Length: 84
Image 1 (cartoon, rainbow, N blue to C red):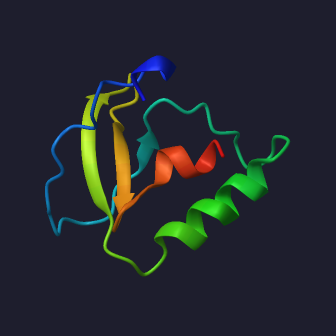
Image 2: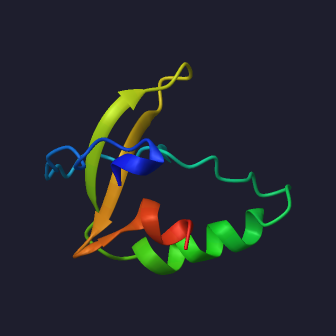
């Protein structure tokens, strides 16, 4: 992953049962819903995470206060699946 500008390994994941938050996926410029492929990106993400335990590996916070993070469901890193 380091070749793509990712850290050599995702940060440690923490379990937290807080209220839902908006999280941006680190390393991905995901299209908005009204942009080309926006609906497809949303559907893929929903399929991967809906009603599942999602582990969040925070990397930073963006200028809007959103957490920018790696997302993992089981052995699947959601960030990587979206670029396949």
